[in-house]
Length: 216
Image 1: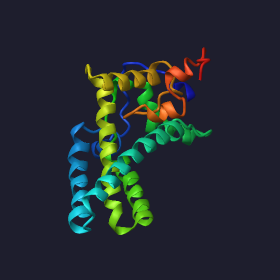
Image 2: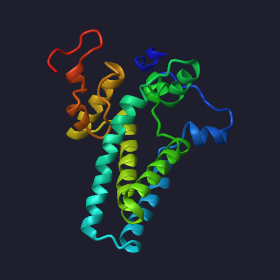
Image 3: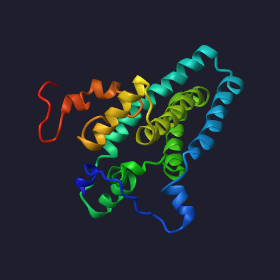
């Protein structure tokens, strides 16, 4: 199973569910679905924060960008320590393949994450923020966090399916392709390289599995 995180090809990924509804909810959806689903949700959170809870504008933007920043750390943790963790049992191997291993086996068929897998996670984050920050400020932080997630979806999809000359995008795309094709134990960030730089997990820091970089 571990080899599945290092293998890449251009074949069509297997269909996970025979039922079309289950497949749409938990397996594969169109790129437009996250935008249609989460942009109105973000707008609702912003409305609730500023106009219902009367959060001062400066405070709102501070909390909003805190949520954005929190997302970048969350995506790094999620990708490095959760999506690449393979439990030592058959059920765990299958679950890992379904959640992330299949993407490494079929990177050229990259899609957005279906709502059946993202909504429960974001709902849990919302509950944690509510009990941590209280009923007023959690809206602002969650709006930034969800926007960060949506931004990740677009960047990740573009990294696999598009070519742009923007220097920032080229850097992110190169790092992510290093993660897929050179060393899957490197370059875990999607929307930025800050956490990989901080924890020295860029491909430049680690190198190939067979010939690791010596200058960490």
